[in-house]
Length: 182
Image 1 (cartoon, rainbow, N blue to C red):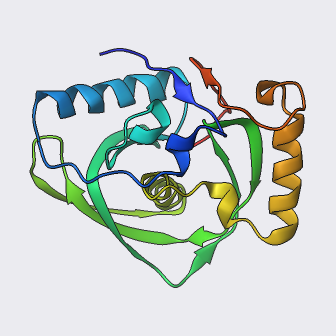
Image 2 (cartoon, rainbow, N blue to C red):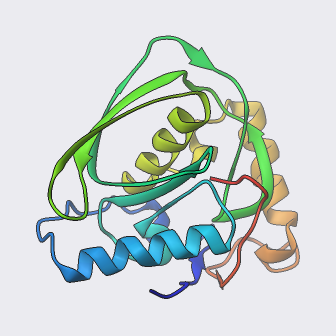
């Protein structure tokens, strides 16, 4: 298990859809352990494989002291929505209001290839949706309304980690953090 560098906004891996996992082997188990260790070290509420440069459909979460992971997830979302600030370890130190479904039922597999179903609401639902978006090459700022997305892009351009206010460039940080960032 190794803490991995977290890829930051601007890295193409973050906007590239991930490939489904087909081999439930030792490499996958090592990836899940690395994701978990990196997420806890950051600290964050979730971390998807693309955020550490691995283009596979795997993510981990740590919500309300519950650690988990999901491989090749599919989601059923409630019609009821929640509003709340959302952050991301790949967009450190920033958070913006983002609508999400209030509840989710996620189906997928464990790192051992066993089928699993996870039901969550509020923060867990937000986290599962956020991390699944990463697997689809979607960042949470893509889900913001027009006004907030404009504010987010300006804040990113001005962020210290984004090259002193210049246009965002590909950078890697070993410890991108934002409190309860997802």
